Figure 1: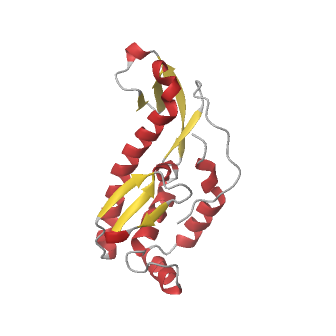
Figure 2: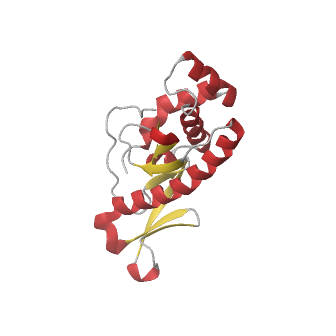
Length: 172
C-alpha cells in the first residue's frame, strides 16, 4: 500500500508550540531543560516534551518514539483483526517503508511504516486490515477488494481519506 507522493512538507523546527501528530491528533511541543526529564522525549498531559540538550537529534528521537508506539499499537490491532479474519501473520515489523504505508512480506510477516501511528485510528486500522487481506490475496484483484469489503465494509471511505490526506503526515 503506497503513501501518496507529492510536494514535501516543510521540516519541523522543534520550537515550543509546534504541532506533532499522534493517532490523528495534534499535540503541541514543549521544550524542557535536560535536568527535568530522564528520557529525551515524552508525551505528558497532552504535550510532547522534548529535552533541549537533544535538539540536534530531535527528529531521530521522534522517529524512535513513534516507532515504539507504532509497534505496540499495530501489533495489538493486527492480533485483533487477524483473529477475527481467520489469518495468522508471522509477525509485525515497523520501519521506514519509504512511500508505502504497509506491506505483506514473505513468510506472512506484515510490515508498517512508522508514520502509520500518525494517522487517525480508523485510518490506521484500514492499513492493518488492508495488509491482512494480502495474506489471502497477494494482489489487488477484484477478489482482494471483495474480501477487504467483507472485513471492513466502509473501507472505500477510509481508503479515500488516506489517498486525499495521507501526505499530511509528512515532514517531521
